[in-house]
Structure formats: C-alpha cells, structure tokens
Length: 206
Image (cartoon, rainbow, N blue to C red; front, side, top):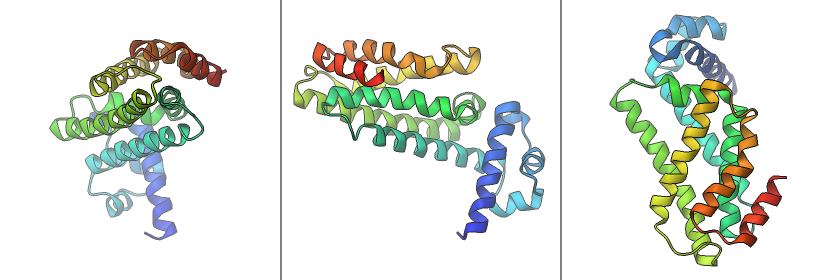
C-alpha cells in the first residue's frame, strides 16, 4: 500500500473511532464516517467493504498497539515479577492514551454477534498469553512460587478489564494510570510475589 492510500486509510480509521465511540456500532453509519473523515462514501468503500470491516480493523489495530506497548515495557525490567508488573502498568497507559479506541473495543461492540465475540476472544487469548509468559518467567526465576499461570493470567485480565470499564463509564480513577501502583501490588500479591520483587515494581512506578 502506497503512502497516500495508507494515510487515507488511517484517516478513515481515526474518524471511525470517534463515530463509533460517540454513536456505538449500531448507531454509526458509513455516511457518518465519511463525513467525519472529510471524504466520500465511495472513498470509504474503496478502502473497506463496509462498516463491519472498519470496526474489525479498529479492533485489530488497537490489539496490535496494546501488545506492542506491553512488549516494549518489559525490556528494561529484570525479574519475571517486574516484567509482569510492567505489563499491568503498560496496559493502563495504552488505554489511557487511546480512550476512543478503548471505548470502541470494550463498549461499542457489545451485542455485535459471534464474529466480534470471536475477535475479542482472540485478543484476550493473545494478551493472556503475554501475561502467562511473564508469570512463567517469574516462576522460573523464583520471584513467584509455582502456580497455574494460565488461570492467573485470565484472573489478571479480568481485574484489568473491570478497572478499565469503570474508567470508561465513570471517568474514575482519574487519571486511569493512577490505579497502576495499587493494582500491581494487589495482582502481584495474588500470585505470591516476594516482597523484594513487589518493592522493585512499586519503585519503578514512582
């Protein structure tokens, strides 16, 4: 894809994120997205077959960004527990920095049907896999005791999801990233992280 087409596609996606966030999936139309993007309906269809494909492109783009940011965040950490804690902090930072996309991902697709549910499940599996890798590394280096890291990774995801949903609907905590130190402490304690690892991750958040 040449630079001009890529730029137009990105402009459409940015406009669509705002339209979906404002109106929800079912309330949004291709005409709305065309108007918001400053283009034409025909121009939208040149890049995307329809509204559904625009929506899934947004979901996939956000998923890639979320995972990329999480991977980047763990590079400077030492122990497995520190890396696991960094994923929590990075996740909150990414959602806080992309509130429109977060609302699209977690709120606008409700009731969209099996295709969206499957797409969201794949994202959950990818993200849980990243957390599980960090927890496995923490078990290996002794910064947490042996445990079912698959179960723990989905429990962590559930906690993150509830914190982020509350923020999307109520604006609390404000800012979202202010929840990171306490949430890291709670989740690391839940997997038995030793005090030295927890102190290190807390210090990294200051």
